Image 1 (cartoon, helix red, strand yellow):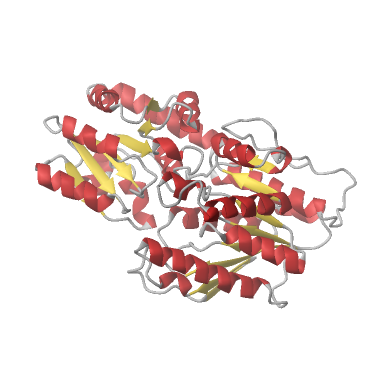
Image 2 (tube, rainbow, N blue to C red):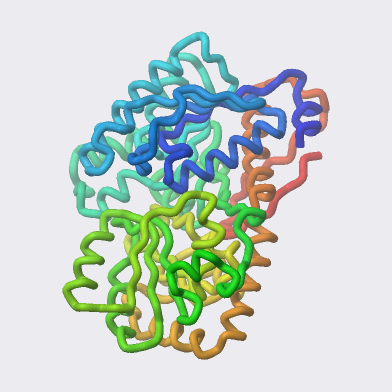
Length: 446
């Protein structure tokens, strides 16, 4: 890819990425961004990251304020370590981070050709809009979550509140001025078009991914993590990641209750707003079929994710198209069957169906989920086949190489549209599609 970038333009391309979460923070979005930035840097693009100190992984010592390696440089602000555990505290952290980001972006010493902002925090789009207005820097919006819809669905804001309507107006202006908009699913794309018609040509569906070289199928009998926690001899159902407000933990909890007398072990690894209430209920009812563990370091993930027989993915009914569970892709990479709890119109159903890697369960269908778990526990051949199918589907569609190539196309198209000199008279192929596909196919640069 390096030669392709060098051949396309007559000078190095400078990309600035602003995101609040970045390793050593445990947040999945930050870990994905690290892999993406590293690969874009390897493709010949000069990448500058502006981020915060660890927020989710607050117990971790501060990361270096500045780092540099190859084409990648990282600058960390301390603002995200103030009150990271509370909702209001995180909101204040986000505002302070945005202010700090604006100051940095307006500093003439930090030159760039293109800016990419995430929705971590959710109002970073305003930062990009201001930077574009004052400096002319074109920008890409990478939407992990769709606000203010998330806040409305969670009951934090009313859809009729003046702030909600003001936020929607700002979003439409931000998206209209954006060079490109990257979303994680077809349902998120449709949510944007419902709010702001006419943006089809700007929206690219680019999924998250997992590192298939890091996370590989591993038999529980050979897995030290499974042995250490006594998961080897029981059928183990794993929920790994954030147990947050956007995830359907109710269906899972009711399934735990239903199967409390069955030889099934449920394992929950991670944290989140719903975790403590979940644990309290389990303890109050005296359920013995649950194990709760904290977030695991990255080097442990290849073992924690393969210490199970079935992975659970969940999204609340009203959250479809507003968020996208990134744990899906590492679950596919682990070579384990998947049960996705989601609404009937969820994009997760397409992936599970095409990948032949498990089942999609309606929110609230406790009996359906319990029956599937028992079925797999009694049919190890079927369980293994579903896991193998999912692994192959992930390798074909969601590796870092596949997804980085799609990001590269979006970025190069944005550079080209800004009239940067191209060495070839033949235009780069457009990545953007008006199709509502759930799986994007990488396109090779000419």
